[in-house]
Amino acid sequence: MNRLQLALYRGITSDLLTLEDCLNLPPSQQGDVNLQHCTWSLLEDGQERLAHRLSFGPLEEMVAQLDHVRTRLMNFQPALLRSGVFSSERGNYLLFEPDEKLQVVRLSLLMLEESPYSFLLPNGGRGEELYDYVRKNRDERLARTQEIFASVIPQEVPLELKPLLKSLLHDAKRGRTLTNR
Image (cartoon, rainbow, N blue to C red; front, side):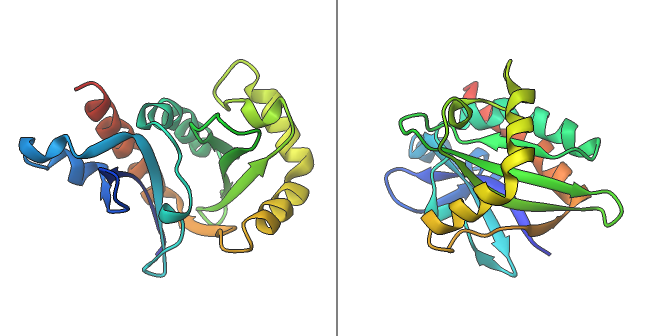
């Protein structure tokens, strides 16, 4: 089955390490891990589909949103996770759409270009406004994302709900450990 994990780059290379791998590094190598540029590793049928295409910015920004995502998914509500990169008018989000009956979550990359929505955090004070906007414009925004990224970004990738919730919980704990060092 497909798998999603938060990952970090080793130094300035494109080598990826899961958060678990980072915590298991010997102290002499821990300084090589770049906490300012994390990504998501999405294995789809054993192939990496996302990590080397997009940085999601500082690990701390991702970790701060994971509890929000988990809570929404446990209540079978769509969830958004915004990239921590704010230097562009475009906001990149992961869109998690749970299906209670099938116990799966469909994962898509969603890019928003419209201000103020492109800058909003889903767990922030205007989160519900962001969710309303995405609900009303989902199909159009997904099509635009595919157009911009030339169809190389995965859309509606199925992930099993329980393993995803477990992975998000572990990534949140590991991420807090790494950012509090």
